[in-house]
Length: 511
Length: 96
Image (tube, rainbow over all chains, first blue to last red; front, side, top):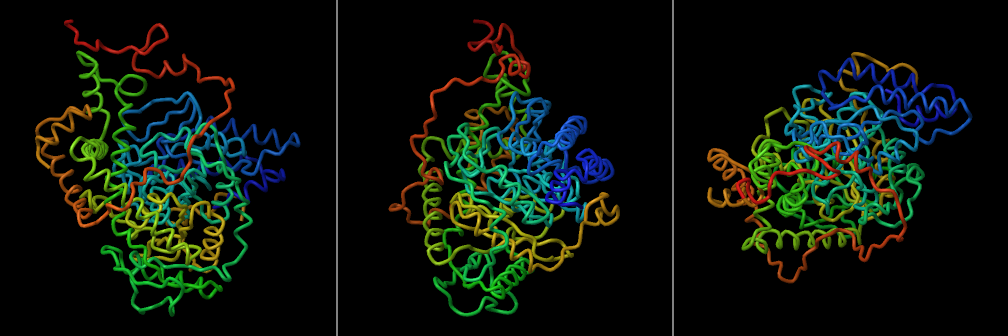
C-alpha cells in the first residue's frame, strides 16, 4: 500500500499519474469490497474525471496541491454535492446534498480525489457499524469481526488499502475506536479546529471531523489540509493552524506523559511506569478494560520513557462518570438535531392524513432501532420533570471532566490510555446497549472536554488483532499530541497487514 | 421507566410505535437510565453546567452578500414540492 505522502509527491513531480493511482485503488475496491463493505457508494466515474484534471494540471505545470492525486474516502455523513449522502439510514437513502461540506471542498482543493462514501452506524450512533441500515462493514483483519464505529467504513477502507486517507466524524470516539480496531491512525482534533459545516449533525457540542491514515505523517498531512477557521461554522475556532507535519520529528525529550489511572491498570508487571512523577496519583481502575490492551499501553509508556519523556500516572476521576454523562447529553442533542427528519424537506416521506401523522409514519419507517432509542432517550432526558435530574446533572459532570483534565494538564503535557477497552469483537457480541456503549469509555472524556485525542497502533492483543493507544492533549495541543504519536509509531512493534492485503500484495507502483 | 412513559416520549418525538415496540424500548431505555443512577451519588451543587467545550461568544461575520444554495436544487430533493415551495399534507386535518 502506498502512502498519501508518496503519491502526492510523485504526482506533483510528474513521475506518476493520478489516473494510474486511482485505477490501482479502484481495482482493490472491486476485488475486496464485496467482502469488507466499507463503501455505501463508490464514485468511480467522478473520481476518474477528477484524477484526469489533476494530471492535466500537473502536465500543464500547475501544482495540483499537497494531496495531488491521493484517493480519499468520505464518511457518508459528510455532504457531497450531487452525490448520495445517506448517513447509512433509510431516512436519507438517495438524498443528494445541494452543497459540499467545507472539509470536502478543502480536500478536493488540495488535489485529493474522492473515491467514495463510507458506511457508518446509522446517523453515527454506534460503535461497530452493526447499526447501518445497509448492512455492517467487516474488519479487514478478520471478516467475522466488527471494524468499530461509527466511522467503521472509513477505518476499514484505509486498513484494506482502498484509499490512503479517509475522513470520519467523532462524537464519542467514532474516529479513534475504529482506527484502533483496524490497526490504523485516527485523529479527533480539538472541537472547533475543523469546520463542521456540511457534517450531518448528531450531537453538535461533541461532533468533530478528523482523518484516518495508515501512518501519523499522512494523518498530519490531512489534518493540515482540513484545519482552520470557517465563517460558515460559528463554533469554528479563529486560531492559526500550526504546521502539524513539523511536529513529527521533534522528539519527546523532556515531555511529561501521564498515564490515566482510571483507564489503565497496573498490568502483569506492576508499576511499569516507574517511580513517582509530578501529579502522581492512583485512581480506581474502571472495570471492563482488557488486560492485553492495558499491557500495550504500559509498553507504550515505557517506550516514551526510553525515548526521553518523563512518565507518571495521573488520576482524572471524572472519567468514571463520562460514559453516563455522554449517554444523556448526546441523545438529548440528537433528539433536537434529528427532529428535522419529518418527511418535509429531504429524504423519506410516508404519506399520512395530516402533517403530524406523516411525521410519525415517516420517522417510524425511516429510523432504525438504535436511532429511535436514542431520540426517545434524549427526549426523555429533556422533558419536564426530568431535565435537572438527567440533562442538567450530566452537564455538571461535563464541567467536572473539564476541570479534572485542566488539573491533569497542569502536571502533564499529554495523557495516555487505551483507545478501546478491547480488540475487535465478533458481530452480535455486544448486542446489549450498555455493553456496546462501554466501547466508548476511554474516548468519551475527550469529547466531553473538547480536547484533541488520537489513536496510534501499538502492537497486537488477543488473536493477533491490533491494539491502539490513545494520546490526549489539551485544547489546540495537536502538535504535542502528534510529536508523541510519531514517537510511539517509531517504537511500536511491527503490525502485520490485514490478510486480504497480504493475499493481493502491492497496489502497483510506490514503495 | 414505564411503558406509559415510553409511549408519551414516542408521541413527543413523533415516532409511531406498536405496543410490542413500546415494550422493547421500555427495556432498552430502562437499562440506560438504570446506569444513569450512578450520577445520583455525586454532589454537583457547586459545579456549574458546561454546555459547550470552547468558550466562544458573540460570533459575528461581515455583512456581505453571498450566493445561497440553488432553490431548485434543494427542492429537487424534497419528497414533494410545487410552486417553488415544499409541499405537505394539511396541518389541521383533511376533513377541516
